[in-house]
Amino acid sequence: MASLIPVKEFNDRRRRLMELMAPDSIAILPAAPERVRNRDVLHPFRQDSDFHYLTGFGEPEAVLVLIPGREHGESVLFCKERNPEKELWDGFLAGQEGAIEKFGLDDAFPISDIDDILPGMIEGRSRVYYPLGKDHSFDARVMDWVKVIRSKVRSGAHPPGEFIALEHLLHDLRLYKSAAEIRVMAKAGEISCEAHKRAMKRARKGGFEYSLEAELIHTFMENGARSTAYPSIVGSGQNACILHYIENSAPLKEGDLVLIDAGCELECYASDITRTFPVSGRFSDEQRALYEVVLAAQYAAIDEVRPGNHWDHPHQAALKVLTRGLIDLGLLRDTTVEQAIEDQAFKPFFMHRTGHWLGMDVHDVGDYKVGDAWRQLEPGMVLTVEPGLYVAPDNTDVDEKWRGIGIRIEDDVVVTKEGCRVLTDAAPKTIHDIEALMAD
View 1 (cartoon, rainbow, N blue to C red):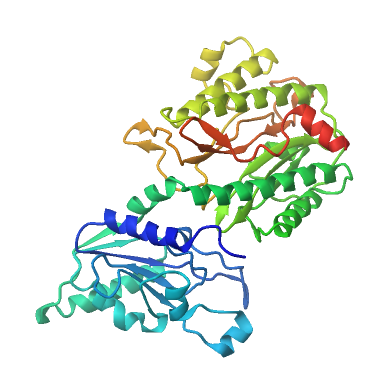
View 2: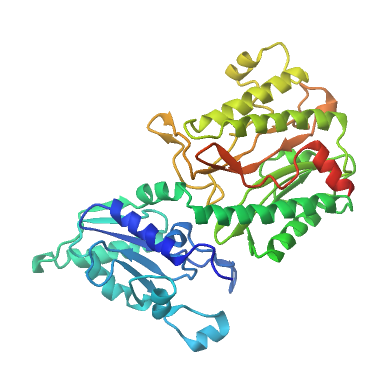
């Protein structure tokens, strides 16, 4: 399947990064290493997000080098050589020719030659941009290359004098999504919405939480998304009150709610959706009352996603609605909305923020504050909006009828020039729409 992001965009990303780099510098970025699952079995390979962002290259054992002003090409890739015998076992490799022809790199060398070639590229550069501390074994190799250069100082070699964290420049670029990136994320959201709808219908048949997880994964793969963006959360009953519950092994019981937090990954871009619905297809009175509060909070938060507002605006909007709902339903007593927020009396029921950046990582890169101020929202930023209410099963401060109910509603939202666009609204979330779908 052809990539939804053209090669030219990867070239443009490398160019923009090099324009931000200081004069007389070099950037070095290794691909993700392969990880052993057990004995001689590897985990399915997933490329490092930064590396993929700059190359689109999906193989391990590769290193990207950016050298602004290099006469023979500014973007250089070290990668594995073509080897028909190995490819018979492990699949096709791009090789050096493929790196140039298919991925648009300026120059390419065998990864086996990196110790001989890269020190010469570093020599004479005053600054090295590099993801310090991310891969300790590769850190040691970089330091060894610098030592080689330092050993030749008396012969006129010039080792770099400064290392700079590459993430400072690169992650700010990643925060702003292009039109092509948003198309990929919208497609991932579309697939994930279909998966959530199928899981809602599947719940009526009973079974176990993992039965719904299987429905999610089946739908992801059937539609071309070969991986989840993160381990799927399928929490029924009181398991919905565990924020990162991934055991997914409990039976589905009539009368319980199911909270599913799941999304697929498409071309290394994540989707992230949460829906909460009744196993039986019908909400009880208590479930309905709490659900309406969470949904109203999400609508209020989404209304605050627009250019000029800052990162905290959606959270504060949701917090006010949730706190008012808790007071109106009697879960918080003898207080006002303002006082309850000041005292953080809502914390036993709502203990997380209302969202996070979304992109190549489900909790994507990008600062939430600039200096001491919340970051302003700008077109191209993508975030989740996910308020929730969780009444712990052992919370004796509330009436027993509320205990063990956990509800979260989450959508993926892109900031536009006019306001925002919800990428995942095809997954039903009103009580009417959920009950209608599950009755069909």
